[in-house]
Image (cartoon, rainbow, N blue to C red; front, side, top):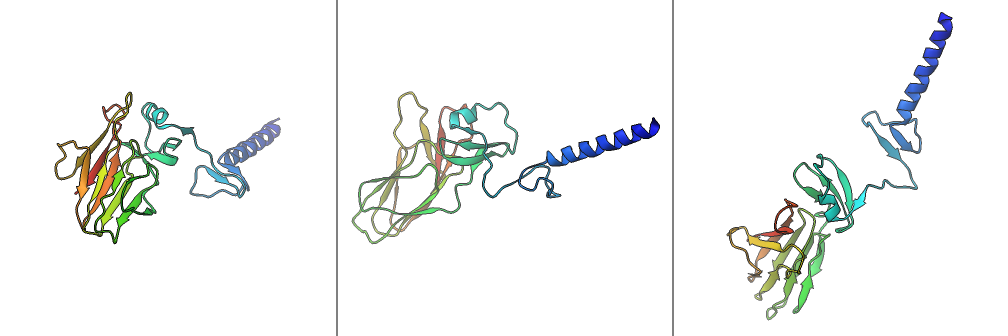
Amino acid sequence: MKQNLIIIAFVFGVVFATHAQMAQKIGDNPMTLNPSAIFETESVTKGLLPPRMTTIQRNAIASPPAGLVVYNTTTNLLEIYNGTIWSGGHNIPKEYVAIPPSGTINASNTQSQIFIMSNCDTCNPTILLPTEATNGLEHIIRNRTTSTITFMKPPSVSGNKPVSFIANSNSAVEATSFILAAYKTITIVFFDYDANDSFSGTWYFFD
């Protein structure tokens, strides 16, 4: 009887250990685990699909822990909560955009961009920033001419929160547009630090 109990205990232990090991990996080669990982997936035909939701749905998550991952369908970015804000992998690499001689060009809300105007000394184009973007989205504007470039925040939409637009040199003053002078470069970053704030976010530029 004692020997039977030992055998049963041994078999149970093997089954439990095997199950515990397999529970750490999903996909191909489930018995080959990375010793540094508590959970691993492996496949050459399928991907990992995180929860998908809009920015409003993401902001409604109660007390998100640092490291929480979602796919934001509003900005089309994979985002991670760092304990303070949601951030996405959008600043590298930046997309190069040649500024047209006139008219308005819309800046992206999902891809960081470098705007450059060259060889146009009688131009005055406008860059319109988006209403909403992911935390840390960064645009760089480079004026390589004697002309000026106007960059401005988006107009307010009835029923939606407005976006704030402030300069590093005078953060107490709210503005609607700014002029980039000849041969100047400026960096503009979007912050959305508080879902309960009266603004949908802030475009903060370093002048």
